[in-house]
Length: 394
Image (cartoon, rainbow, N blue to C red):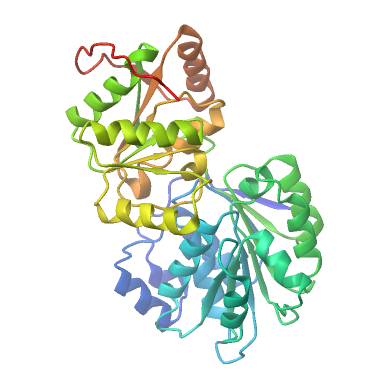
């Protein structure tokens, strides 16, 4: 495997016109207001246009969808009326998000895209597939359903993208991924994207990708981003809700994510915050898809300021302009901390991450995270003295 580890800063003079994109895609670039390619776009697009198999290691929010989307859209034949590209993603939310982004990029190219995922009628999705989209974005479970029913025809497939591969493995999709990939045409271009590269991901790449694949690492060899100002507050467990409420009001947080460990805590805390006059909504995996879509739309539009969530939101959802991430419950491992705080400071903007520590052990764990990430996590004093209230946690 050719390993190109790009640790230097991106070429600040690079323009999309330098990447040999066609006029339809450059029109999409200008319509969307993209000024310069991100680092992963700069590195991935030229190699992908050459047809190379690629492994891209980069954190979420770096422009991966356009990095693989532009080359696929340039090389696809919209008049073929067959599925030429398959993008496999871990969650329904990410399937919808990637499909919408690709469809937007493809507007001038007239390439049809469709998302398939669980939680929606399989018959309705099967009917939509009769429109013969060129690109299908899907979750492993629903793709397996369609493949068993022989609804999806991949014999003309030219492009395969595995996005958030480590997340799919974490969610138990390893066997499904192996099964899906093994049934696709061998002569294809494969692109795999992952924030981390554990051994199972590397084995998948060795088995199912070409020998001359390229490994592009733009993770800067760090687990976290420089643009996040990181803090912690030592707080008594009984004062956490009052402290959180005071913090959100003191900082006038207009778009923030509060992370909790369990779905039950998420529901409880969002109710408590609303009772204190804060526009907060809960989001977790036990909710119906329609409810999650409603909450996400309210958050993106600004009708809700605070999204209280489990780790569901820590990976794979691209939400612009999140200014604050607050760890109400301490993250259980360093990688969880990294992915949570990665929701802010996107596309080069600064963000703030604050972690509540209720005991000395959690403070010590933060010191370990500092050692791993190379980042400084400073202690800040409570914004005001809050009285312990008889709050009964769930």
